[in-house]
Length: 494
Image 1 (cartoon, rainbow, N blue to C red):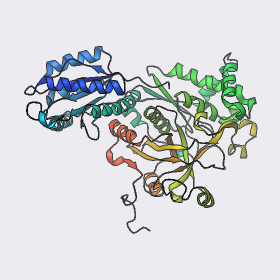
Image 2 (image 1 turned 90 degrees about the vertical axis):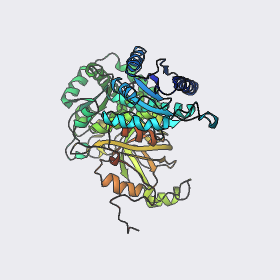
Image 3 (image 1 turned 120 degrees about the vertical axis):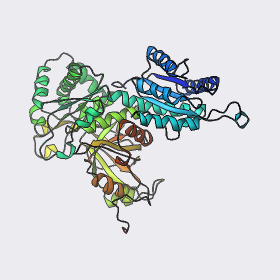
Image 4 (image 1 turned 90 degrees about the horizontal axis):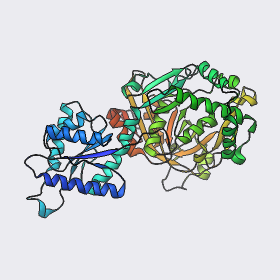
């Protein structure tokens, strides 16, 4: 997918001067071999850091190699100051990880004590107010370290992406739609730039694209993608004109940033002035790697983008929308899946039509049913409808509170292979203990109804990402299992 950074990893071994440097170096070589075999390229820095002079030499080497993410590898106890100064002076995200001892018969001459050195490294990070990525259990054999580095690569990719991201918004949130409104201060704290524009600016740019010679080609591509699901062919040229408007706006306005996402708007005046709804265009941009959130949901767009990087796949943004009717649950869900879901574990995730074709089991481009209740049908065309593909799903969101604190949640579940019998881009979700999560996280913590969705189980890495970018641990929520009570949960509840 486009619109995402390329991570070039480097690894630097460190060595305490009273430990054999050869031990750290041989362990580094083993890690590099395992990583290369399983995951691909990593730059193997040949300068081993024993002191501050070595640190500067290693830093020069990895910078000249073009590394933008760094693994600081404690092959033995390590020089606690020099290794952490390497983290401090390296411009990109860093990881600190330590070698496990290999064998019982090597515990005399070849004992590295990196297990101990990791403690001192973490303390030195704290003393210098530095943040490095430290895995859940940061000590391992070469193959285990290779797996940890691969996790770090994803976390580093998010960090690099956010520092080079611009969010482009169009218009204020509609009246009576304050749910997605949040202070933008935390965006700047994350290194993100934001450009907020008037809908009138967008409308002017759209009108200037009226005779764009590329329209026919884009409309033809839309027709090919939609196939028999193209129920409103008369609106394709307008949709193509709008898609070109957004793509040209991105190119003209991204400035110094490489990555862009959009927080767009589709009502109340969009339909009557533009003459269509933008849902299908939004889905096409998401498919190519440019998430477009609905209803000027800035943190929703950011959440989608993070999930796209973590899953390396298209994502979507859905309303946590409606309960599953009891008769549907009893007939089609109860007792039919590996997990014994209750009706409170299920809900329907819905949006008008912003999910891309590859994430729908079937699709039709048609009119937006809700808007067509109060507007002429011809101005509500352009939504993409269909049931979501069944399978793994992660429901998550990064959000700023009204007093500008970062907060996040992550819940893993699945999209069930059950027909929704409804409209829009929609699916039936099942998340273990969703009822309690809904009440004591989503409601209790004042989250908006928009949730970002990946079509995989990405909870473990999303949790690591949220920690690394600065969300406080007590502000990262998840769907707690039965018996693990939320602080606000009534202990006498039945």
